[in-house]
Image 1 (cartoon, helix red, strand yellow):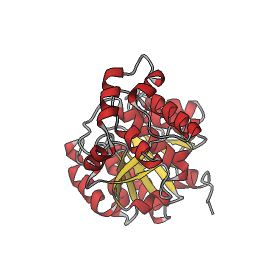
Image 2: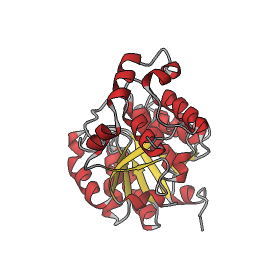
Image 3: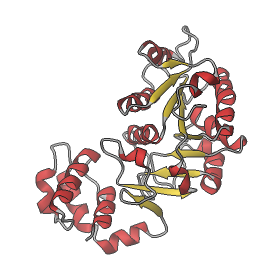
Image 4: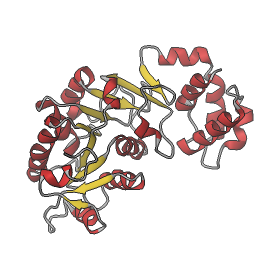
Length: 288
């Protein structure tokens, strides 16, 4: 088994998390050997891993089985020249990205994330309508998580401005979640780009969303947070962006209704408060 198939096998095997898988991959790279048995990898499994599931799955995933499972799916591995360099800078980037649409969008330099509340208010919708179109016109690709609310409004605003947008999902690309975004999802599969680190058939799991958020943060030059509550997943994306040296922008909101408590906290912690398009553009590395 060569390095590419080893990466694919690590991506698909169950029973271990990304940190454990990366520990295995780094050891394999050091040894320059990629044909380990499950018993040889057992010492790398932490107490949080399901050793039985991992070993069974590892033995089951022969090259022939992998080929069958991957049939009909589009993907790039960590070693592909199309894999975005910005994503490689994450502590544990995805081994594989499955995709539908215009894979060349991953090579765009000007990528900015818009994330925020699923239960977006009229105010939040107006922020998206005011800021996304002029960014799209200036050549920025909008990346978000294809959820309800701010995510789907951001994707839609980019497309309506004849711009580019990337959706990152936390399940297999043969599953649309949530169902309410199906029309946007379908349009993006055909004309934009949708990516996932999970193969077909992978259902939605709660822990997939923080994993998805790290990809959004990794792809973007900057993250814009719209109407995030105090314990919003958007704050996780913002923190991941900060951890990798990215800019974080937050839109102020009503201090009384709780919808923007997370945004206000970000501003207090040093995120830039955004009240005009110039506030964003002047912080971007290619600002003119």
